Image (cartoon, rainbow, N blue to C red; front, side, top):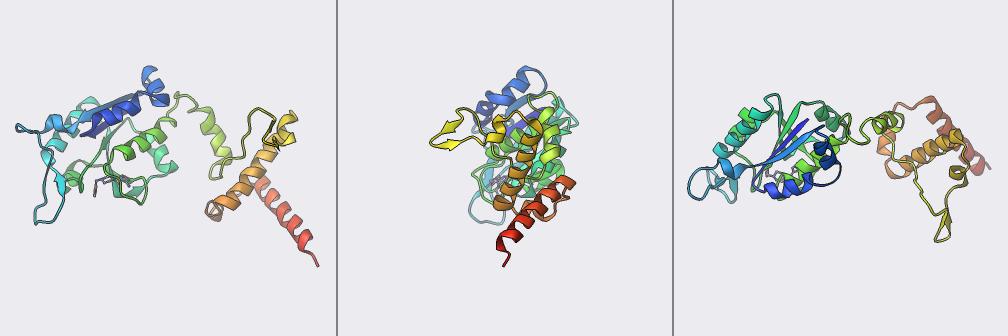
Amino acid sequence: MDFTVLTIFPEMVEAYFSEGMIRKAVDAEIVSAAAINIRDFANGKHRITDDKLYGGGCGMVMKPEPLAGAITAAKRKTPESRVVYLTPQGRPFDQAVAQELSEAEGLIFVCGRYEGIDERICQQYIDDEISIGDYVLTGGELAAMVVVDAVVRLIPGVLGGEDSAEKETFSKGLVEHAQYTRPPSFNDLDVPAVLLSGNHAAIEQWRLETSLIRTFLKRPDLLEDRDFRKEEKKILREWCQKIEKIIAD
Ligand code: 4GX
């Protein structure tokens, strides 16, 4: 996978690329990651990247020529790359979109500042418009980094990319089970005894139960259109029966 971020603030993105899992993946040559300064493709003494709106109105829009130049340069490296524009108008980003993007050969992220980019860039150069949520950022850079961050951990060979992807098919669409580490007692709160029992089947059962109850309490929307597995239905029916018993008479 080749990640390229087009931005007028390349240092912001380079700082992110230089730490953590993305850095390890780059060092291991499983992915490449680079920022391209859109300003490098702007003409004139001041290398201006924005301009006034045709038709009037306040605010500035990113000029098409520097963006076209930067996208063309990025495509020369990986011609099969998908060009993604980060915008609140895009399709909502989620884990399924992250999975889809992780299968691309390369991803080129266009980061807009000001009020956005010239419409003709969207028409001619952009393959995909993505939104990371219904709020307005000052630029697309943080959104691009969010998308890279979610995508890189899904790439085969990237630390944790294989076995956790497998585990996730098990508990996919549920909130994480409760997690504990040492010490066994902290501020008068004990680690549940089952986790210290060494009984792996009982531990897996407990994890599924806490995962289901936490999903019910924190994210009931996730249960709404779920295809429940047999063991999940069994756990839920047992709760129903326990509650029925408590409220009987
Ligand atoms: N999820 N932003 C894009 C420039 C802009 C302004 C107006 C189109 C219209 C964002 C988000 C996001 C801030 C990136 C504004 N583009 N990106 N930028 N939410 O808020 O992805």
